[in-house]
Image (cartoon, rainbow, N blue to C red; front, top):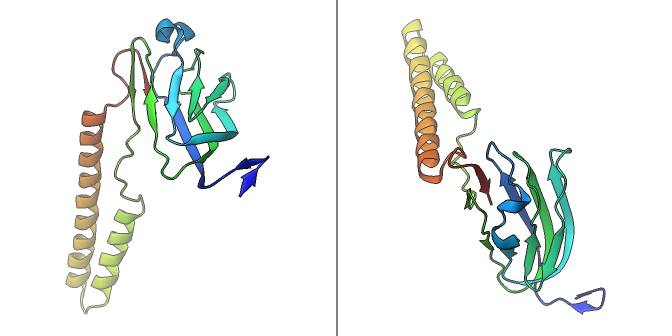
Length: 182
């Protein structure tokens, strides 16, 4: 397989998201000694397919490709700005590593919270009601509905605990200056 004359042996499309989740902008002078953010994809970058920046008022940063790396900056990264980059790479097992020497900015890899779907407590309450209604008498409905609501409550508490410990361990974006989740 080839693209524009370049032979591809093991192509992959990667999507990278950078988010300034902090409450402050990251100014261009926060890049220590003017060194850009360096995203090593672990495979030769063939092309940047797409890059977007949200919100719309935030200026999209310029991207440069250097072998298996994409560099960003030094540039202003606005508070709450999300930069998404899609890149075509060629290599057996791409992996992401990032180097960012930013002054007064905590840079960390994004760790999604363990999700409990929002519909789950409602589904369990409905299931409890259905189980209760399948029996005879009002007392079973009350018990069944209570079991369903009890399970829903347990799941909600579990979700809150998981969220709390994730934020405690990974941070909530309120530490020192701006925070960037990568």
